[in-house]
Length: 289
Image 1 (cartoon, rainbow, N blue to C red):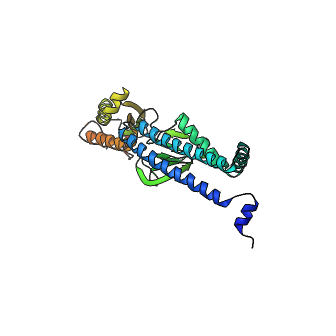
Image 2 (cartoon, helix red, strand yellow):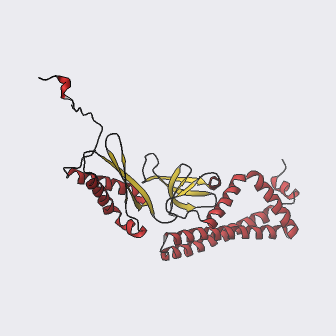
């Protein structure tokens, strides 16, 4: 059997120099990653905002990838020994990547788009297609999410981690909860009977919402909004308010309970519910005696 090393030599590939160059590239990359890790941890301790922390993580990844590309290019040049050989090698590599790695290359382009356009940052709560979660990391190939909801309909972390391929960013809708600020709108609905004191019920609903959304109302200069509508069994009082995106479900629950507790203390406000009520209006139908 022809020895594999002799075959490689016959093709003009010197095996030992290649191994040496690969080991040097790996060693330089490991050393650079360690140094970059120390710098990154130091900067993260000084970062004050979510956006600053996101910038540090993203740009440290850019520096790491850029350094790897540069040392690989230098290694190829040192091996082939000329710019002509480097050009031929780069052409062959590009053709191979274009044919075999279409989606990963699209993913890298999507990563560049995320870095430049910044549709979301690390720490933002987003929805990509039908996947919802908090952005944990933005890698060259994947968006790493701490899943929210999952098997239950909630805004609470499920405990699962989802890796979304970057190329899907060009194909799916992206919803960012916290792109402008940390607040989103929520709503709770209470239905009261037609015999209830409507004005009092509206005030109860408004005060209950203000109790749990005062901070958001002050920052956004937007108080809770009340909307009413007639329904079959009563009048719907819709309370719309702004709260922190990560706690909107808890805030909605707290407001609902507050409204319920306050209504229970009132004699002229009743919560409506489906039931049957018989009302006799025409007594003549039943005779005179």
